[in-house]
Length: 138
Image (cartoon, rainbow, N blue to C red; front, side, top):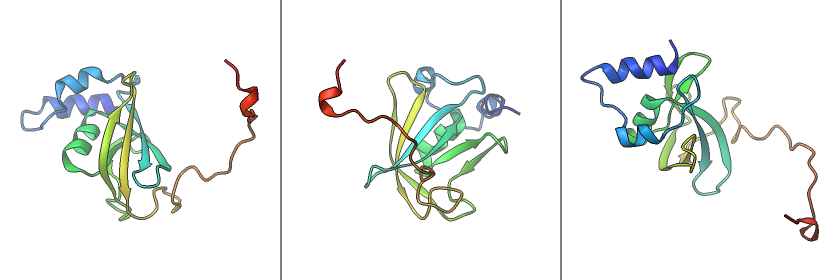
């Protein structure tokens, strides 16, 4: 079942609360019904990880204060820290100007990465040209 199918079946259940229709209308989802979520430490501003959210994951994130994602590999919702104890408490959530990316600022408890590291972005910097200020022209 795709994330879009799961969201549709959840949304069609009369007892299941749904994502605010005004917010849902602003989202630009990929073909699987997902939106990218960039997760940042609220204090240090360091990017911790990137996850994926369907409508239900976003609704749960916004209404519980705990970051919830759609697992593309397991094809199910998961709450960050549910099994590891490495919880993400949501302090703010923002939608970008295009409606296709979310930014979550979180209070991270424990490592953010499934490899038990503080961030998923510690695989080493890539070589890139860095221009000096005087070389930076439009």
